[in-house]
Image (cartoon, rainbow, N blue to C red; front, top):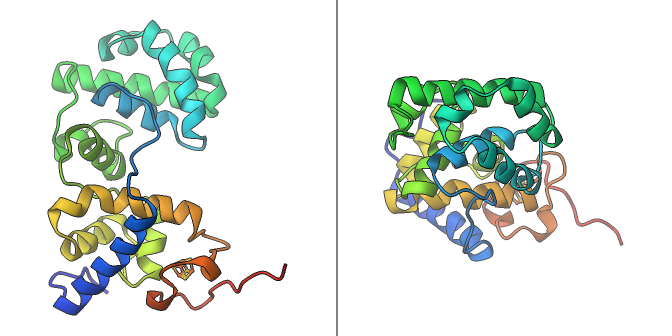
Length: 223
Ligand code: SF4
């Protein structure tokens, strides 16, 4: 099925009810990554793959102390960087990624991270999801980040019939007004982590049970 290009009023109303209930649970969500500017958030986001935000937060102050700017990191010795970020896992690959990213920021944009989705995704290692998080978090620019949680939850709740992240993003953008875009993904990501788990969703305590199309709802466990 293609994107929801022109959702009906009923579809929009349903989408709004769903987000309102999730928002009630998570009124104030944002990234748990520590950062002071777009460059730091970009790097922290790359480092956050396959580890916790808390782990990343321990490492980034040391990293930015040693390499304050993109230029500094672009010229870094990989082995030194590997030692600093070791505890975040996949440290060799992550080192390559953040040095390449730094090189791109310097070469393409003079060391300044651009506040523009199309420009951000031209940076090595930056996909639409990361770019959207940075735009929304740092500059409050309307954007929806689609990660595995958003994709799964949106699908189960009938907000999209697609699995391709770009199409899921288009569906969600059609369903929600721009002013809610930045919250959409952050709140749904949190909901996906806490309640609508991939393998064992906590359907028995879910505030959206009555709106959910997922067929394999988990029954309340016997205590
Ligand atoms: S009822 Fe279950 S599958 Fe549906 S949204 Fe809630 S937790 Fe997810």
